[in-house]
Length: 413
Image 1 (cartoon, helix red, strand yellow):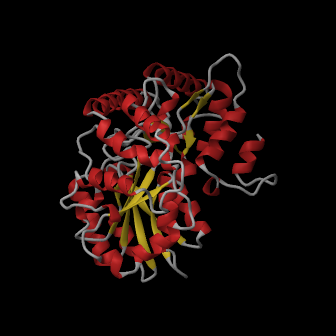
Image 2 (image 1 turned 60 degrees about the vertical axis):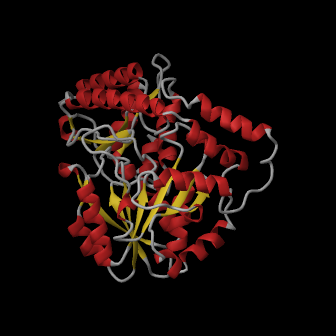
Image 3 (image 1 turned 90 degrees about the vertical axis):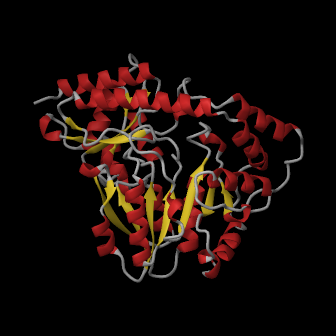
C-alpha cells in the first residue's frame, strides 16, 4: 500500500512514524478503510467526545455562553492569560499540593500541546538535550526537533508498571541536559505512578540538576490501585513545570484551554530568569480565545464531583473490558492492566500471525479488513506494540474488539 510505503520510508515519501503526528497516521489509516459494510470504529485518538457517553457538563457550557453573551471578553487578553483564569487554575492545582500557587505561577496556553511548545522553547539553548520516555506522546519529539534540541530516550519498564528506568536516566544525563519529561497518568501506557516512585524521580532530578516537565493532561483520571499524585508535590525537591488542560477531565478537548505552571514554591525559576523568558515567549504566541478563558472559573466551580466520578467509573468499566478481551487473544501480550488515562499499550506477537510483518502492517490491514482504527506502537516509539484507546462507548468498544479477534483468528498461523 502507498500509505505504508510512506511510513516505512519508501520512495514516494520522506516521512516516517517518528516525524509524523498521531493525527497524520490515523488519517492515513482512515483512508485505507475498504468496506462500506462495517461502520468505522476508531480506538486510535484520545477524543472521548466522539461517543455520546462522554459529554461536558451543562455548567461548563453555560459558563462559556455567559462569558460570550456578556460581551466583556471580545478583545485581546493579556498574553499570559486573564488574571481570573490564572487564579482559578492556581487554586485548582493548589488543592492537591502541600503549598499554595499564585496566579503569577500559571500561564494559559492553547491546550497542552502549546504548553509543551512553550516549555521546550523556553528551555532550549545551543547544544542542549532533553530526556523523553519511550514510549512517548510524539509531540515532544517534534517540538524538540523544531527547536534543535537533542532528544535522548529513557525506557519505561513494561514489566514494572511502566516505571521510569532511573538507571538509564542517570547514564543519559550530562551537563547539557536541560530537563526530563514525566507523563502521569501515562499516555500512551495507561499507568499511574506511586508516590514512592515519583519521589525517586524527583530525588534523581535533584541529584542530576535537571528540571522536571510533568505532563498531567490526564490528571485525576486514575481508577486503579494508585491514586493520582501531582509531580508538583515534590517541587521542593526538584524544580517542576506542570503542564495540563481542561480537555480530558472536563471532556472539552476542542476548547483548547491548557496551562503551564511553575510548581516549585521557591524562587528557582525566577533566579534563572525563566519567568522573564516565559513572559517574552507568551508575547509571540497567542493563547486560547478570551471568552473560553473567562469561562474557566465558572467551569471549575460549577462542575460537581458526581460528574468526575461517573467518568471514572465508565473509564474503569471500558478499560477492564478492553484488558480482558485483549488478553484473551493469543497474538497479544498485556504486561499490565490500565490504571488511568484513556489508553494503554499491548504487545503484538506478530510471529503468531501470517502475512503480518509488524505493528504498522497490522494496523493498516485491520483498518482495511475490519474498519477498526488503532495506533501502531511505532508512532509512540515502540515497534510491534499497539496503543488502544478505551475511552469509547462500551458497545462500540466491544464490537471493535470482537472484530480484532476475528481478524487475528483469520490471520493466525
